[in-house]
Image (cartoon, one colour):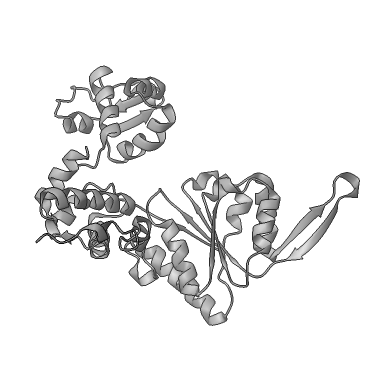
Length: 346
């Protein structure tokens, strides 16, 4: 007799997908995989603060997207036993918005500002005094009758995250007592990330499957977790839920992720550069039109990894494909590789 399946559709019995994804984040510093130098330095900073009974210095985390900056901010709050407020630079458009947020913070709370380099300049200037003296001046009135009312703030810790550290102003950067740059992960660390995520998601992940997925994750835990979820979906439908090397290869072929981790857009850029423009040089605008994408999309989404993988080079005359790009596409590179230096590239 077939068992009833109505209960499977009951929302109360189905875990919220957002809760599942949030559970992939490590909760403590000891659970955080990779970034050994950052973890060690941060552990000293936090332990020292706890022993002194005072909030630690403000923390700046920089590095490419997907490496765990937000997770570390939440871990900092958890290790301190403090509440955390989360916002982003673009969301703080006026100084008044920031003043309202700062004055609502409790003693020892953590304020996390993601993409802090995009905070509005008036709000940034207000942040200087708040970070140094735990005080803000609220201006009441306009013109000659305006009055600045000083307001004391509860001691707090600001954690700022940025993917563009070079866009931070000097005065803001100098007010952070601890700065850390996060690097891309190596394959063994990504495999550890995948094994932990597989346990949380209850996925039957085999060792060879973890190796295969890690090798295509671009050194980024966020991408590794995303690929694991897609391979899990494929394995549940076509491989009895077992994620091994064969399943990972077959699944990632379906999702257009190749052996190096290149996706559809990455391959389209390389294909256009090599097949239509003979390997370059070609302007990024022309390249974007050739693949049907915006110039910003090609520059900010595809190019960083292609350059890091040694498949594309930026030169004063335009983008050029390296010999590795030709080989990756199964083509014979020209005798004089377009990626090589020339008199015009000096």
